[in-house]
Image 1 (spheres, rainbow, N blue to C red):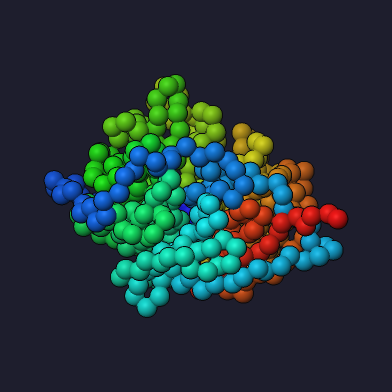
Image 2 (image 1 turned 30 degrees about the vertical axis):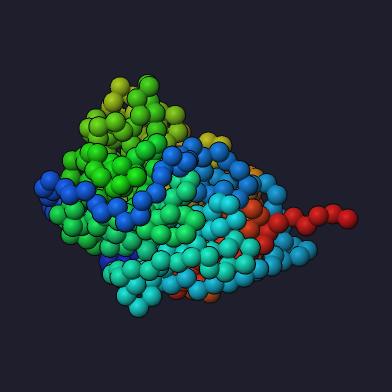
Length: 448
């Protein structure tokens, strides 16, 4: 799910877990199946539309959550006008909607929300009224479910860029839509163009827009013209991961960091040249998180006993500051807030022992742990943790390294919840893998 999120799945069974824990440090990844593609034809432009008004710079504002991890790509919402304490009055669920199987999170702007789901061999992109849940437009296309030990369905989050919406299906159908009408502008079939097999868990990378370019994981990092889908460059091939690239600037040069199933790879944004890498083979080939950039540091994390690492990036060189097994993100990203990381440590197949963990970002020292959320997800807003457990329990708590301090809880969904919720204009949008989408009204009521 990048996705959170990004990629979402469950490898069930105690035997599999025991094996992975015992051998995670000695396992080797499978051979990279990606091959260099031949000369690429220009994708068909289906609708002629001007891109002159497309916006690429996100200004944090109420109701604006344009892509995976939010306006600043950090999982932190700028919203403050919402209630975290429900002790006197529980929140109201304004509406519920069926959007199909999947793990795609929510994007929001201008009174609309966008998500994706799968039903009976077709994947659908939805544009919904944020107030009512009514469909404004929807577009469907054939797609594989890819339900290997998970519910399947789309795991990438739609990306809003001005007048356009970009999506990535579970089987690698990358599409640009006109956001007002849902008309298809262009599409690109990633496995076909890049001569690669669909990854074991499908495609879950959310499209990343930077200026006039779109970046996506396709067995390698690929840069495309966002107007046409035409390739600008492609980096060297690796075993595909399931996260989303993170963009950053260092010493006046812009870079992209991607965690694939071989390593953390750093490439120049301009030409895709890899300048540094840090070996990070994943047990069961399950690297699925988005790197967290803070200053000159890059944080990465993986499940199945692999753990996490904080790396310094300077002079185009990666150097490990620490590695440990104290924060092992299976698929949902941790969130960095005021010098501390908050995230789920553990794997979905043993959800009962997964613990929400607060860890010092600079030292890797654990400050506290709290069980009971399974492989759920979280975001942060107004200094509060908003947690959605894997069983649909919505919990608020103080975002503090002192201790876990719960504020309130409210049951919102009943099925498997691995998708990070989104807070937009005081409403919290939560979904489960069965396709149940709930709008929880957390807005502060005006005083009389």
